[in-house]
Length: 87
Image (cartoon, rainbow, N blue to C red):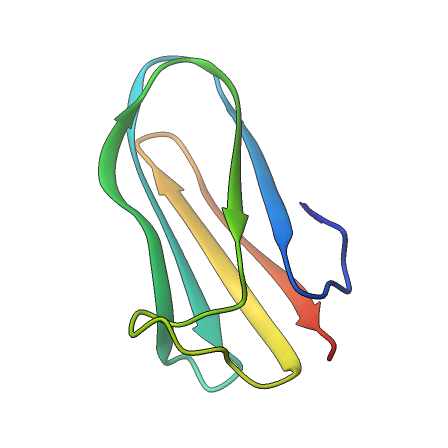
């Protein structure tokens, strides 16, 4: 899960990998539209990782308050979690 949640202005998304893998991590709005691509099919070694989201979209514009979803996809797992941005 991300921490803190709810958050303002940043949140850290933590995940662990059991082996070296390709990873994608994307943020979506509640309607399922892509807001921000944080990691795009990049190689990560096994272990624990933290990725920070600053509440901005792919055009570097601050997104409004609300519920967002992050989706972490690797070779061995797909995880989707809710998070709330409060201003």
